[in-house]
Image 1: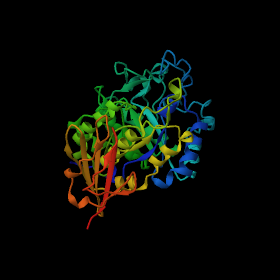
Image 2 (image 1 turned 90 degrees about the horizontal axis):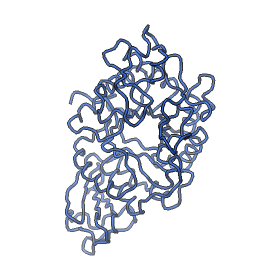
Image 3 (image 1 turned 180 degrees about the horizontal axis):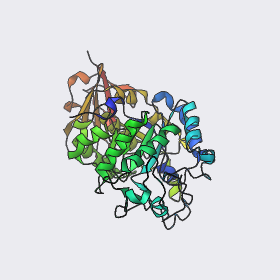
Image 4 (image 1 turned 90 degrees about the vertical axis):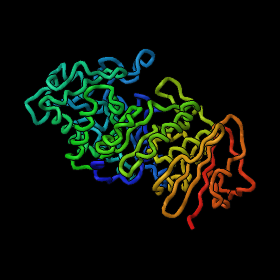
Length: 423
């Protein structure tokens, strides 16, 4: 491998909250502050730290025609003279006067948290029509935009022609702006699976711009599935990359994730993390039309969190934090689980049959075995498939000591996680 992005400064998978699963395109400044306040008070001590504003924060019409469109075609949007999108002033009033997200980022930082935003690959189509400037050049937006490169599910942007004069300067100007706001995390969409011909070049331009901006900013690439043969490229240019399309609360999607994690496990390294996507827990869906509870059972949520953590996927909560119930809070504050994720140095799937999948991992001081029941009924755990040294291990979710001779019942679609000191 030639090198890893940002010299491996990111030593653990990012943990935080993202607005999309609950708010869709409609999140407001008030919503962001409320969730940040909650995280700072209740979750920060367990490693949760990023607050990420997801898609369409620049749209002045977001959510206004949700019965027809998720993204209103050619919606009015906030934009500066240099073709750069700005927050919608009605939803983010502190951005008025050209302040952008700086005041909101400062609010989040003052809570001891980190601030992130979602962006789309490319340059606003509106800027190409208006022929607005590219900062630091004599070029206008229409000269770097590729009008044949349009995301098939979001109409807001044109791809950037990487060979055009001013293309890198455009991305440099974006990161100059985001760094001035205090952005710590960027989720770039319509780019990870490289559907467009310029995707790979645009990832490189983003990477270069981040390195020039003078701020450590996590770069997350979406949507997946990421291309396995491009794993070295992802490591050289980003910190996270999605290995799946949007992940929602359906068992078949969770079961499928075991195969994806097994394929990507050899390529989980400090500074670069294959990403299983957000955690659809708690209350979801308000921005999609109706608030609802997650379809996942508590046991399925334990399976999801156990797999994400032993695989070392980034963790982004999708729920509205201010409405978390006690059982969900218990899942999100299980300290040994998140300590395992941050400390393990290797992990892999070690066993699979029609009933169980087992992953094992090691940290400098502990070893772990995660046993997943993938059937539709409770079953006695396959403890004969793990090393006998796990006898007397602690089961993380229940805090109970396990006897290999007696075995352990695992609920349908559930998991147990054994933790044992290395002697």
